[in-house]
Structure formats: structure tokens, C-alpha cells
Image (cartoon, rainbow, N blue to C red; front, top):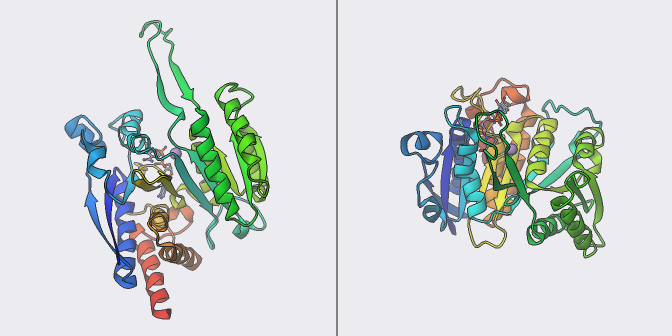
Length: 361
Ligand code: NAD
Ligand code: MN
């Protein structure tokens, strides 16, 4: 029997609410399957921690979690702390600190919910966005105040970093994922007409790597046209690989088209396994609905499925995803996807579908 140590970082706002729901699902699976057990270590990092201690995580925070088997993350951000401080101080600190260079964001069209996309075969749509997760536009390199603050002529510089190695590893990862899928297609997205250095390098690496995968169909798009393509011809997409910023934007678009930001799961992988990987929903802390018990837990529960898959439990991951689909098919859903159920009711329904699967075995 496998035993895992999970570092749990609920964070802020609805992050705290949905992480507990995900853990309830994993606990249920651990109890019923008898194939694994786990312990969770909680880390109270986030905006309240920042207000109390002047930092988003403990000073030696990365040390404290680097030997865990995985990190399960809620969301960060609260109106009392500037967003760039909360994001850089915790989520990006972990992604970059642990070299989690591949951010995998599946977009699933779940049965029975109101998708925003008017398409005849929505149930067949199934994309994976692969986001470069350690460099690009989120290099953190830049500066302000070049001509003096306060004179209304301030100049700020925000630099992107694209390394050949960084582009190559994430592009290759996308091809490897495509090999396991039905259509075997990778779409690369840049804005290399306007961004003539880093993104042209990306395009060149993509073309070079694609030659090693003759069985994979490829496509290269500019991001503005790709935003339209998501809406107009979603059936053309399978694996989509893009830089840190562009894939961030496209994944919110993709999940909204599928129904809601609240259903989108993600995995921040350090594929070499030198450091723990981190699993979190795509959405943020949603201060507008925090504390009301109505946040959609599906994205975070789906992220737990990605975590179990990563930990070598693909059957359990599949069961969670099936239970999610059975629940939306029943119409047990939160307001963001057209229902009236609470966060807890959705999780309860997912757990009860999981129980049925075990009695059927
Ligand atoms: P958001 O994702 O928090 O919310 C956008 C909209 O989607 C809101 O109307 C919200 O109510 C809704 N929504 C999001 N998740 C939902 C869910 N599970 N169920 C139902 N509705 C849901 O994005 P935002 O409003 O731009 O940002 C809020 C805060 O979150 C900011 O501080 C931002 O910096 C932070 N943020 C953090 C992360 C992260 O931790 N990974 C990601 C994005 C944003
Ligand atoms: Mn985002």
C-alpha cells in the first residue's frame, strides 16, 4: 500500500473552501480503495499570513515542503494585498522554485451543464492546454521609475525571457501528450509577428521538435486568431502549447467556454521529479463569492484526480473524473454552471457516486 505526504496550502478566499472538498474526496478514496493512504500537512500561507508576517509564505517555506510527495493548492489573492505580491509571493514562488515547468490544464466539456459554446458535438471536445510555467512573460525581470516617479512620465520595463531549453522542454512535453491521444495534434500559439525575439525562438524550436514526431499533426497560430478559433472551430484543437501568459489567458477562455472557470483543473509539474509537483484549480480566490459556500469545487476536485494520476494511481483518478461527470449529469451543480447546489452538496454527490462504483466492483 502506498503512503503519501501531501503539503496542503488552502490559501485565500474560496481556495480554503474548495481544497477541503478535494481532500474529502481523496480521503473517501483512500478509505474505500485500500490502495493508498495519505497524510496532509497544512501550511497557512496566503494573504492573512502576509498581513501578520509581511510575507506570503514562511521564509524557509520551500524547504518545508520540498520533501512532500505533492502540493495541493487552493488559490491566493485578497483585496487587502496587491495581487502581484500575493501571486509572486506564493504561487509563482513555488512554480519557479520547484521548476514546475509544465502546467497542464485539461478543458473538459462535462455532460448536463450549460456550456457557453454553441457547438453541435460539445461532448466530443476535449483539449489539453500546456502552459510554459517558469519563464516567458512571467520572468519577473523589469523595473520602474526610469524617469522619476510622480512626474507622470514614468517608464516601466517588463521583460520576457525565452530560453531555447525552456521552450524545448515544454514543447516536447506537448508532443509526448499528443502521442497518447486520439487525433495526435499539437497546436502552438505565439504572437511572433509582434514579439520578434523570444516568440520567434519559440516558433523555431517548435518547428525543429515537430520533425521528431512525424506521426503528430501540427498547427501554428497567432494568439489573437487563436482566441477566435477557440470559439469558432473548437473541434480543431487537441493539445495546445503556449507561453506562460498566453496559455494563462487561453485556459480561462477554454474553461469558460466549457461552462465556468470553476470546473478547470490544473497540474504544475516538475516532470523530472526532482521537486514535488503542485495541483490546483485554474481559478483564483474569487472574493466576490468567498464565504458563501457556493464555490464550484469541481476544478479543485479534478486537480486532486490529476494529483492521484501523478502519484501512480490512474484508476482512482479516472474514478474521480467519472464521478464528476455523473454528478453534473444529475444536475447537482453550483450557480456558475446553472445550478442551485452548494459546494458541499456537489462534493457529497461526487462521493456518493464513488461509493456506488466500489459496491459495483
Ligand atoms: P477569479 O478566478 O478568482 O474569479 C473570476 C470570476 O469567476 C469571479 O466572478 C468568480 O466568482 C468566478 N469563479 C472563479 N472560481 C469559481 C468557482 N470555483 N466557482 C464559482 N465561480 C467561480 O479571478 P479574479 O477575480 O481575476 O481574481 C481574484 C483573485 O484571485 C485576485 O487576487 C487574483 O490575483 C487571484 N488569482 C489567483 C490565482 C491563483 O492562486 N492561482 C489565479 C487567478 C487569480
Ligand atoms: Mn490564470
